[in-house]
Length: 83
Image (tube, rainbow, N blue to C red; front, side, top):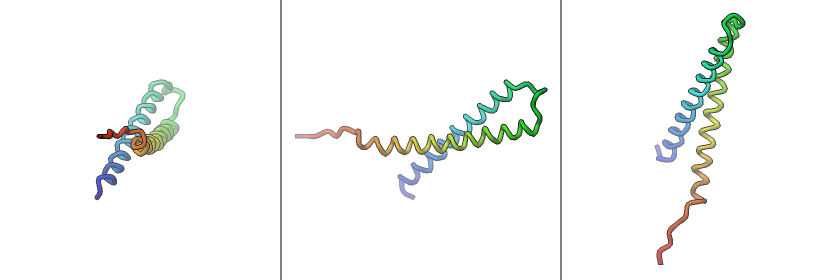
C-alpha cells in the first residue's frame, strides 16, 4: 500500500471520527434540551439515527475538504531557489 493511499484512508477515518463525534454531541444536546414528557422512544431513536447520519455526512465532508486543502497546498508552497 502506498503512502498516499494510507494517508487518504487515515484522513477518511479521522474525518469520520470527528463527524460521528459531532453528531453524537448534537444528539446529547438534543436529548438534554427536549423534555422527556414530549418525546417518545421511537422519536428519540429516530433522532439519534438522524444525528449520527448527519455526523457521517459531516465526516465525509471534512475528509474531502481536508484532501482538497492538501492537494491545493502544493500550488501555494514557495520553493527556495539557489543561485
